[in-house]
Image (cartoon, rainbow, N blue to C red; front, side, top):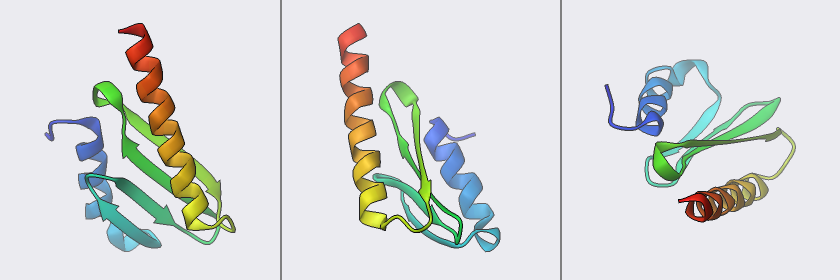
Length: 83
C-alpha cells in the first residue's frame, strides 16, 4: 500500500495506462487524463486528501489545470481556517 491516497490512485492508473487515453503523470503536480469525452485531473490535497476536476473534452488543458490549481488553493485555505 502506498503512503497517501494520491499515490494509490497514481499507482492504479499507471497500471491501467493501456485502457486510458493520453495521460500526463507527475506525482508532484497531479494526473491529467484526456479522453474524447472528458478531461479528468487529480492532485494531492491537504491532509492526504485528493482533489478531482472533470471538464468537457473540448475544454483546453490549460484551463483544466488552472481550475485544479484554484481548487487546491481553496482546499488549503479551507483546511488552514479550520485547523
